[in-house]
Image 1: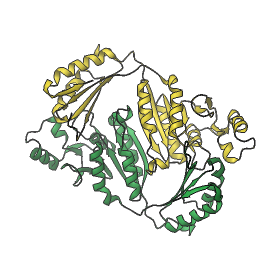
Image 2: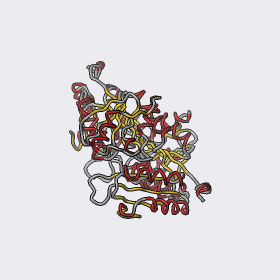
Image 3: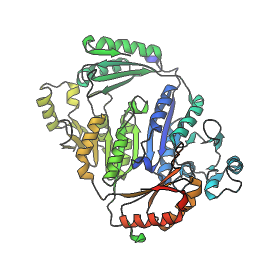
Image 4: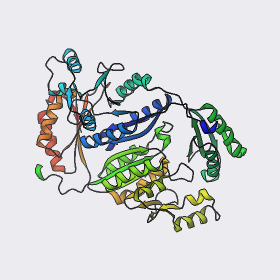
Length: 251
Length: 251
């Protein structure tokens, strides 16, 4: 069982690139990353990397290129408005070595819904990396712009969340299964037991998270796998290893 | 004034590398990045990049190397405990091409305070990248480990925050000065005015942040500079450009 674990399970990986000086300078407490991390996990996607980069063309392009080459898909957050500091479209285009072009459908949308004589800022909202496609759904009449494996999402939390929820179905894959063990013993005491469990179940996703200031427990140990049988076997094995009297609770 | 702005001001740049599967998988809502972003800004440091990477040696090493080569200093958060998933020390050592060694002072600390016969997990806490130095101060008797321009901080928020506060004095540099203008007009309306302001004050840090669902304002425009005179000039200039009747308030 152990040797084959996970082989049949589909893995989908994702990188998240957050664009915004306002986050790096501490003006805004980003909530999109936590939202995305939970949502992606809930649909079985492995979020492999989050990067927050400034509103600078080369920084955006470099990070997007890095993620697009390594992960199945990439989400970007922020920098898609009409002002000078909104340069995500240009950054993604540069990442792919493509020009920025006006998307006729977006231009028509802007002319019909906002102004039939849009100013420069209005027309900027019609710009996309060449070859981009539009995805309807979610909040706003404005669609999500996708090019290759990159999805450009708005940074405003209500819009980011709504757009991501609207995209979830296309990313959904085999789910993760999970257990947790809470111990009254510290990490130093249980570290060798976790090592022993990993030696037997090398594909197990095993985490150890100490908590200070809690009267309830000292360490939360998490076990995860996409293979339910593998997870259950590892869980039982680790429960045998950890002395009963230090286990506070299980999930 | 404008042409010379900022030349005399000291710039200090920082990269923040957060190590933790628990953040990428959405189990934990990271608060260290927001804390660090605010604190660094308050002491004049430009946080240029935040990356969240998994508990994997190569991912940590690559990101730490990237930041250490580009920024004046690097903070890491997490992965410094005694269990299998704590591999920040090894990752930083790999980033610098150095071996991991036992630091005699840390080993003595562990023997005197925890156990005079530490187990393997206990001794792991004495490991550092070769050439590391120890910095006393902040919560815990355990010092912060520094090697080259890299500071390895614990991930537990209470400890991360305390250790960062203890380090602040060594990073402090010329402060940023800031103004904000809140408008009832949308970004599309004011975008050209912001462009005009930037054309005249190219070194101004100018941000434009739309808010939805607020009855008070639609856009918050932020102006920042380390040069107070430059900031005040730019602020006055932009106030002249934006029609009075769309300005809701100023800071």
